[in-house]
Amino acid sequence: MTPEEAYLRFRNRYREVLYDVASESKDFDSFRDEVNRFYQEPDSKEEERWEKAVEEIRTDAVTIEKPFSDLRKEAPETRPSAMSVMRLDVDQRFQASDNVLDTFVLAKAA
Image (cartoon, rainbow, N blue to C red; front, side, top):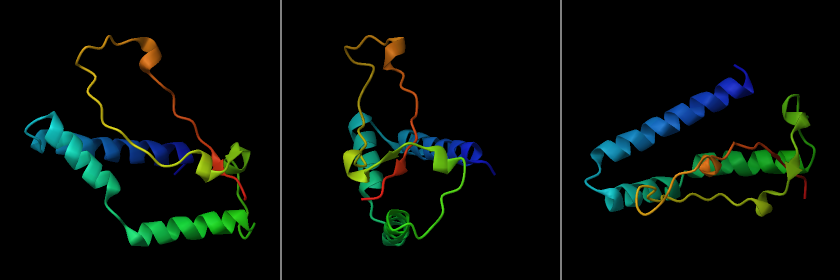
């Protein structure tokens, strides 16, 4: 599986989760609250895997292979994990500039 395929699968699965939450929500507020709960839900095993991977990259304990070695490197602290749920159907005019392309970066060694 290529990195692009893996990312596409992740995005599709994540979207399915959001659609499931939407279908089970009685209104926007309950949808927003459930998405926030889901996003903030701790997963200690995944957090440990993430921290280990960051440490391995920072200490050059692993060799980053292409295509990942070609990614721009940024300190994770400059792009903290964040998510927000906003209504887009109230008092807003949609424009093409509202669409934002995904960007990919690799954690920079500290």
